[in-house]
Length: 99
Image (cartoon, rainbow, N blue to C red; front, side, top):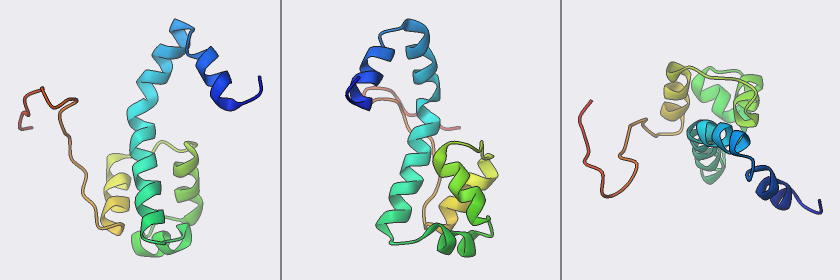
């Protein structure tokens, strides 16, 4: 294998690997959105820690996918980034439902 991309493409051909990857995708999307927002605001993990009261070590673990944060912790991170958590339809054709 010459690259991670090639490895990933090969691994995802296995139905069991693909199913597990797809199951984890929403969590990784949420984590990536938090990382992108932090970087866009030019905040370090330490600065976000100071804004949220969540330790820098925990923020690092979350960003690496090594910690499974609660909704409450995601809300604190979102608040610290000036964001809100909300559910949206999977596609533009799906009808939005109020929860």
